[in-house]
Length: 308
Ligand code: AHZ
Image 1: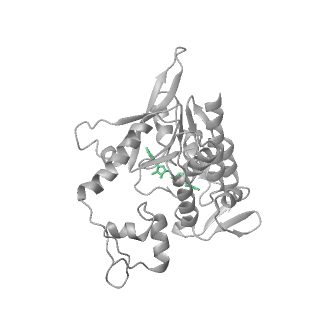
Image 2: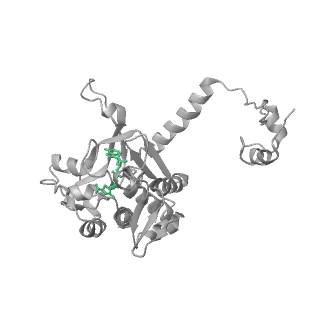
Image 3: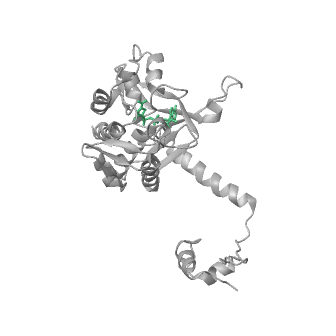
């Protein structure tokens, strides 16, 4: 007999496995009972494997050609994804994030403490995505940085036009040359991050590609993977040298990063702290308004390029 909890009964029939009534669940052998009778429908291991593989590879196949690739799912990259995807539901937006856990440095505030400071007017974005804050006048404080990041992530990932491939690193850029001899960024070269990290220990493990008219690079400041495109611009001969991130100055840094968010090379928009390495701008430490402003400006720059 099917014994469903009265509340969960409703949830199961609405959100379960696409069935209308508890009786249909019963035909699968599903029992939702918390007094020792809880029962899942039997499943074959291969079904689980195929459920994942089929969707993942269909997505890879589809997104081999995207409208926009965003490299890096930190605060600037995710903000850019949100603004772009909500303004233009017709665009195929693909986020490539090297880490297993997306979010970059936005899971904590400064010195591993939980509150996150966001200077106005970037608080308007918090209102838009529904993150509560304490108003301190010229700035606001979110009680836990993870509340901001998890809300933004869930908003971005719920959008049907956004795909995120995490644990996947961008390990090169596609650079085409047009008939005038101008070099244009035309996509990214990807590999599983665990493969990308092992090129020194294994023989050649070839990568994959995603082509697109605009790449937004938001890989953060220099680190094991950070400032990826800025560094590649130098080795590709498209930038003479890195500007290198300067010392901390909150007042100079945040507006400078937002105002300099731009198309740094044809087809390549740069956002967030990667720009501090590209241009030689100050860092701001644990204030995140500049990252939000930069992500939004990167979205508008991207739309300008796509519409031109
Ligand atoms: O894993 C990286 C992180 O999630 C990812 N990433 C880096 N290289 C990549 C690659 N392929 C794919 N080659 C890559 N993904 O990019 C994300 C960058 O996030 P972040 O939080 O480091 O950068 P952000 O610019 O969005 O935010 C910076 C936050 C900072 S740093 C700072 C300071 O040092 O003073 N202050 C703030 C607010």
